[in-house]
Image 1: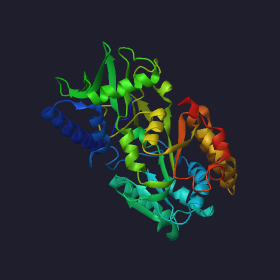
Image 2: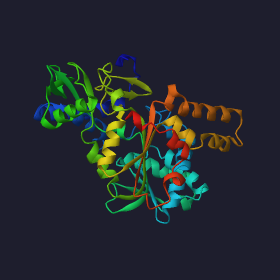
Image 3: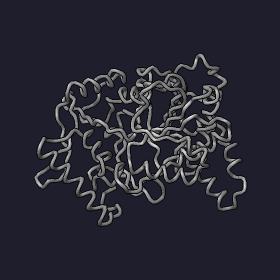
Image 4: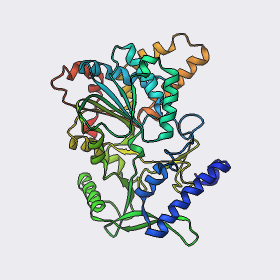
Length: 402
């Protein structure tokens, strides 16, 4: 989609974006072109200016995109149902850590569902670096949760530094990590940078890759069993193992669940996917102009779940299951959750609930495009495998595709 088809921002939003663009131009003029990963990090997370750091609405009908948790309560209730047995089995003092809490919708519905299943964590931690999003989460949860549940919620700035046990959960977090873009020319690896043209506009520029990026691309080729064709362009996350160690390194016993859109490596780097998966979200439109009004749109790339599995293993986690979101929700008892949620609804409410479940479950919607990857650590001492991991989830496991 061409940016001319996108809705025009208002004057305040344009001024905000112009400010961020000016900061980026000054940085490039003073120090040279930015690696694309650095550009993406700044337009998403620059304090007070980046997309996730400033005050615009991101989630829901009036934002730029809708996550599974923002559709309604079903997703969170199913995740709670799937992980409640393990949380109970971990015993007193088990915590829940959610990475990037969005609007707070997931935490709201998950805590209510966990309470109904006698599986409340001792503390529900939200790791939320955005001060603006944190304020929205606090306001929502304070207004919608009973005082006793709200008292269990704690906001943190960084992953726990001391050992803990419980559940780590991340929905649509990895897709927002700044990606390194690469391409091949004459068999050599180049990294994509962001430069300025003669009219001070942002443009892409390819430069010979350093040893880290080149090595990561060669590792991909080795794993794929074939070289990339000249002109092939995609992205990778060389920092993913370090990120995984940072967020899960102190989890001594428990489960870690990651849900996101993506593919196994062979599909991610399919020869026909010659320009990668990077895209922008603006007012529920998906397009490819990553320079459109910096700070006003989300930039995202799909997840290489093979790389995520490797990063988990490097961090000392054991891969427990890898399934499409639809199969995960089915194993978690979405039919029972639907029946419970439908009680007392009028015709309009029942229709909305049906539409929510369709979007979550249908293959052409989120059911196949989104994947769930579950890790475990230190659970052999607990009565885990079959009792605390849903048998249906294990039967649906697709790790052989990784």
